[in-house]
Amino acid sequence: MAGHLWIVKAVARKFQGEAERDDLEQEGTFGLYKALRDFDPESAHRFSTFAWRGVTWAMRDYLEKLRRLQRHESTDEIAQKNERALGMYARKSVEPDKVRLHDD
Image (cartoon, rainbow, N blue to C red):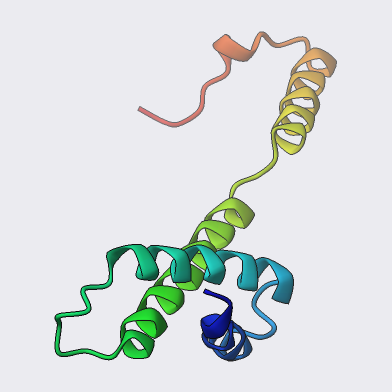
C-alpha cells in the first residue's frame, strides 16, 4: 500500500483549498485501501487507474459530507434562535401557539 500513497497525495492536490490536506489524505487512504481490497488483477485496468478513481471518489464523498454538515446549523445555534423567539413572545405577552403565522 505504501508504494501507492503517491496517488493519494496527487489527488489531494486537486482538491487543495476545499478541506484540510491531512483530512483529504486520510479519506484518500481509505479509498486506496478499498481499491487494494477490490482490485481484480485479471481485469484489463492497471491498478493505478483503478486506485485513482477510488481515491478520488473517497475524497469527493468526504467533501460532500463536509458541505452537508456546514449547511446545517449547529444545535446550539438552533437553541439560541428558539430562545430569542420565545423571549419575543414573552415580551409581547403572546402564547407561541396563539400566534397567527399566515393569512387564511
